[in-house]
Length: 380
Image (cartoon, rainbow, N blue to C red; front, side, top):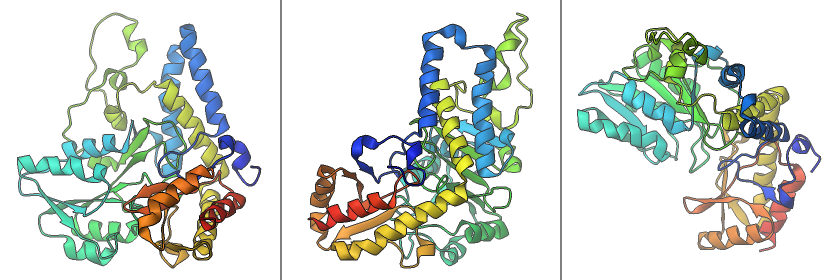
């Protein structure tokens, strides 16, 4: 495993990991940071006040650079659901307002909003023509009471890509807030939120951002963030450990801390956040555009080889419309579970989703590994 970026990762025990949509592996530089975090906890005198402050700030700056926003506008979370619940429970939605969702979207995009029905907020599901809502469907679906549209950038159950620029412009013209779950896209696709008509973007850190499990982020456009009605005043967001030294006991709860006010509790999470920051910094050094080009070549190679291997690709025909999630099926879909086990036995890891098979390669994979997976498929 020496091609491209592969040398910066482990050897996966000789296996081919094509399931980044489930878990992305740590690069070795991040694994080194995780080991150092263990040393800090093994010898607690290493956990200085400076390190407690530096861990979340380093992560905030890495995420800001990744998303194209100021570091101080990044909210640190532990999942995509963290940011989704913050929005669903914090936006000033009243009885009679409406939230639009996509039928068949990932549950974390749906459940927080459906909980608002108890207070009179309407939730309406739009059925897409082909697994992902298109701009014209969104334009037709928006009604006079619509206040929010929530959508995945890349659909977990089909790999379809939302045209977030076009959809965002439609939402902006209609006065609708556009919330995007970037969990299956950010890290594999570039984005610049300073230019994008998106009002909130959130996601996880353990897939395409190659971080530990239990990591996530949320960005909310500052003017929208200021409208949140959400009672959260975590003391380490409002103050610092240095504020305790004087012993006055005086609270400064009204200090303006911006997006930090909504951080997940425990922001000096050195096991996860120190490690994740190193992963994002690694991705940034490689260049997200360069990573996206590498991933696109792997996806095209896999899709192009499926027919000869005896399988049917469910990915869009136009390579420009493909994501890094490739759904495919045996010509007899009833055999997909058998195919999954056949691949596992030959050291190739994919996923089973929605009755189909899903391959999800990322920068650490190589063309030779794609060929090995195709050969394993053909051998059945």
